[in-house]
Image (cartoon, rainbow over all chains, first blue to last red; front, side, top):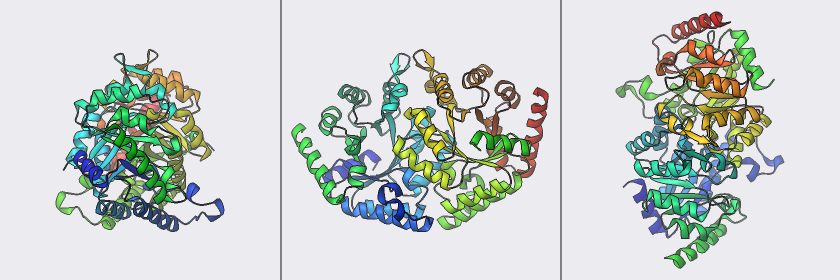
Length: 268
Length: 268
């Protein structure tokens, strides 16, 4: 099974298109006086946070998405493997939000370790231009590659939307590269500056089979219905802080699950 | 001392503008039959490789530059701290080649850990557009930020050179952002597609105080003299594979040191 098939299986079995963030942060989790300084203590707290989060949300999500900037420094490779094994046991796919963006020989090292840690896919930043090469390298390692296309943060507009390649906005050109090179999907923000038309345009360029990974819902305030109408079913709606730092993670996940599935039915 | 001052001190004390790569790779280090599968064994081999490399090259370099895609998965935070402490004890600066490129709240997490691991600076990818924000965040953590400007791999041309922002090539616009936001330096490739004129143009835009970090020499075949003539003294010439995987690392480092210092004298 390739990544898109794994994702579709998880989506259908879990009846969910939600991914949950696994982004432990001392600042968010603990008040200043409670924050430990010992690396081993932090390591244990963070690992338990990730495992509990999977346990609390497993009935309402189809994917976990740890971000490298939160987990790679404090957690070990063996802990990442345990996290991924647990996710797989519950029928979830695991996407490392890595935003890999280096030269080929260096990307090869990252892909080796990401595969070894048990992830199913990773996110990729196209700034180094090597979308084709990275897609081939990821597929050789049996990993899906999801390429940043139009990000959720407003500062990205000048480079992703306003910069032109042969007269075409950069995000459209990136979408063309994704289509032409068999890349598995696009990361597309779901916040104010990304319009319905932008999302529809990207979907039209890349085709219906690519997975859209859409952060921006919840803490970042994106609109779920807009997204589903424009992007279609092949989408992972990512909920980070609004589940992770809810008082009751299970309940927050359930509420997003119900809300999103209500809209899925409406547009089906 | 800010990062640029730390770099200048190391450069003057070591009489070197070379950084050495700390990029351990099973594939490069060991033949297939000798490659261990146990993560703890790999961890020890990689840590020793990094420590030996510092020991072997410390008299000829001013900086170490581990790349995250090689070290973050297999090494622990405590090992990274030991590597950085050792580098500092020898008067070297330590730059994490991280190519950080996420939204602000996520970058904040990376910067916390990178500081905690003892690095002096990191590389940054501008694709998310937030150069100003990331520079401020890095400086709050007492870290230097070195922004990808024109990379060494030929696939990067379509996005970095051929894409235009208000009619200006993207790498020039990025250079303007680096100048305007007090970012500490630029990553500029030293390979064929990067011309003398490109390097001079970037130097003119950003000013003489910014540090140029230039990979591409050695294994990638860049031309040292061209670089020095165009970029000036505020430069770190990065040598990766040509020292790391030389039969004699110390000798290889010494040879680069002599060659580069010969050209430095010629243009002084």
